[in-house]
Length: 89
Image (cartoon, rainbow, N blue to C red; front, side):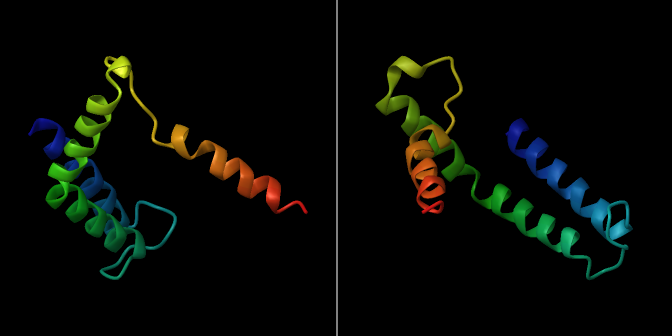
């Protein structure tokens, strides 16, 4: 629960900074950074169970990875490289 509050609070602070004009764009109630941060904080808060389940699933199917962080991009690495190489043709 502490991690959920901390992650959501951090994104809300970024949104507050966007609305206050502490970023690159001028502040105001329709600041895109603030609106985007509010939306992301909602996704984090309401989707926290899904986020936890995805990491639990990863540990369940690959027990040798316990204790180490698994980057999801490792699985997608060959696809990303193939797309980058394919564009050079």
